[in-house]
Length: 229
Image (cartoon, rainbow, N blue to C red; front, side, top):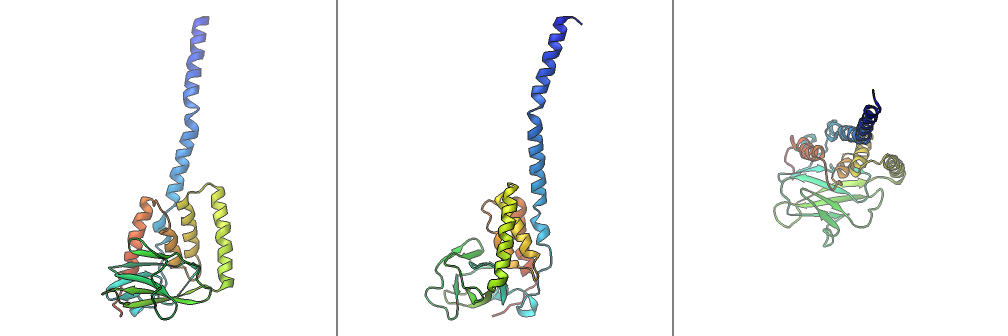
């Protein structure tokens, strides 16, 4: 082989190498992204059987045809800024401790079939009620729940902080962190369904898997309800 051919062969090898090398990190990145997405199976973690409800016949609370999927009657929750999600048409939603008053609807952020309290943290160990108006603007019914006692809540708070730090160190997405927290809540005994759902609904730009789970889990929680007034 003469010198010209040797030079040409060398150039061809250099061009091929330059073309292939940059592609490898991208391929690895895409593979990693596919793995991360496949590991966020929202449907799988919410397929576990929910705790028996305290509503009529053990179902979720139902008031004049409106099913409250979370919280359940008398449920204990971790969040001191609670969350409510329902199936049906509500006229008004409020949060109160004791007798409802004019301030019950303050600091309530309402989404599509769910709402969150955004005011000052509620008192630990205390019982509150989500108020619902179904027929008109008058309060039709309420769902009582209790904020977790300080010692138990602090243990869970510490676990969640450590979990979030671990996920951030892995550069986990916001949805991935919410997924990890929701999974943690559902692994508690008893499972903290309201808190897990609150994490699922905290994601601003949900993946298709999360959107599908949101639709299906509410149907599953409310499908066997019996009316209660």
